Image (tube, rainbow, N blue to C red):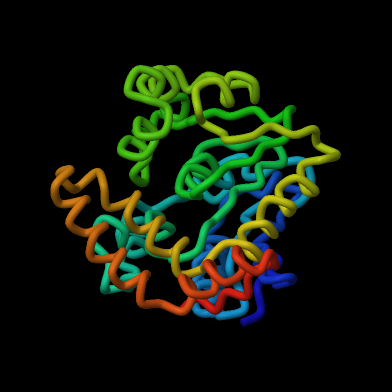
Length: 270
């Protein structure tokens, strides 16, 4: 597929999806939505990909929705856009929503936040599994200051990352949040200087891609996203079931062998 508003590349078992409208601070458009969705599907299906990095070109990650596109927005367009086919029909309906499909992807997704992260840009950052940010990044939910409500599942996801009180503050005030505060409240996992962001993000991604079992990562990711819907007993029973599968898998045998032989593992994801 020829992408219009993103760049897509795969190298060293890492897929990189780059929002590519730097002259507009990567403002979100329907075309970008289509491109990102397709690239995520491509990454998910590619056995050569073990980790996905989502980032932005230029000085921003994503500064929110393209305001020019919003001027003439027909509410019916939103209803039509939300009728996308399920990303993975084997996963729960909660992860079949318009933007909430990231948890259905059985590979870790790292948001490499290289600048302003606002509105729908923040929504996508939250759906990433991990967030590494440049230390000059500014965050804002933005919605309330545009006369909008908490959109696209952010009212569910944000409290689970930063806690109820912090989520209430960020959503009601839509104030600007510094990278230092974002790290303190758990909105991001790691801060890096702008010059070191790419190096540190890809060092982490390569560590996952080279040294961690793909099958283990897929199950662990699924476990963590299922937990909000489970009791402790249900989570334990499911973990016991998955453990039996793992113990009979080739990745487990390779993990043990590589440890004993003091060498890098050669995982296959089986």
